[in-house]
Length: 525
Image 1 (cartoon, one colour):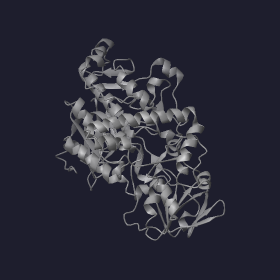
Image 2 (cartoon, one colour):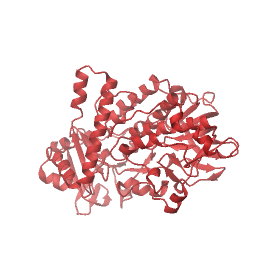
Image 3 (cartoon, helix red, strand yellow):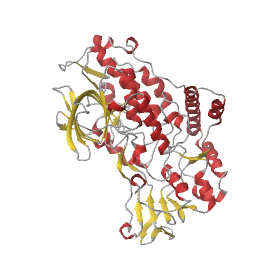
Image 4 (cartoon, helix red, strand yellow):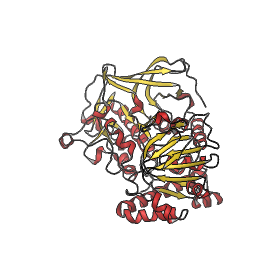
């Protein structure tokens, strides 16, 4: 499903401009049509179609690393396997757009270059390059909503190793997988041990001569059947898909909460249980050497292994794991610190990605460049010093990304309705005096979740406020906290069309309990 990028179809002004047509942008568009039906909006996407991550990633075997009951939308039942392929997810997203009449709002081939808030005009001026010829176009909007994800699609993270230039084979990153790459009968080394590597190894093993997963240190994996007995039973009983979907979302959310609580309270017991599942597939010496991490469970995201396919590939002998460090590339492969050499025709650097703030859009306030990392983030949605802009960021660690997409969408729609009721043209969050005195923290909770891509990008991210009200938390807290936020509080600085502050009595007139806004669907913790 594509929407033409002809100039006559893209409006010059909308009330709300959504940047990004991945799962966040589609979710935002859906909620706007339901909760703010009187607002005009458009969705701009740099790619040739919808899908975001799922359109960009084309490496063999690419699949979700979250279950689709919670990664899917709350309003569209998922009827397939819990872990889905790229093509299945793209089909699901396309159906969502078509079934809800969203297609006319989506404009593809539109690369956003900059966004400039003009205080004198009370709107954003957004510079766009359109189509194959990258023709300049300008669109204005009253409210800007970034749904651009958190990493650069066009380039992955590949460390610089000595001797890379002398390697005579191919070096590829999964994020930019070449269509013409032929790995049949080749010796392949996959550097890395995250979800991407765990997907690639079993996908490559049947066709290549041999594939080796080379890791610096072991990672936690979670092997499980790619099915759910409860979902199967409910479907066999003829339960409606929407009811099955709702029950499964609640069940999985509860199970994840129990799992994370156990991991935090008794990490050693959790570790032992996770390693025991791996030991059902592999001999003890392999588990000890290559699958016993030194860090605590869930300090980094745990890679799912549906049906144990990674371990089954290892058992066939067509795949193997090496735990070592790279000393250098050689013309025919890799030399490791241990002195071992790995021959390779193809080296895949599944070494992560580069995070991006706001899709690398150049942000300005009245023509002056804005440094996003200088702002303080309110619940990861609004940011000090930036009027009329929201950002959707999902969960990174345990909960599915989309669970937060819904919470953020409900919050933003409620805020837009609040502004309409009290006659506000702009809103900007502001730190209370006591919070300013306490200071702010680094942009992401790297003490708890220390993945490499987060540590590399802390300098790009906005800061976190010192109190709970200003920080992004887990789903089990936010599902009740976000809907309960009072939008008439001092945190929100509302101004009218003339730029005058809207006083407390007028803000209270739009108190959430007095505004007729569709209530969000809530999952129990």
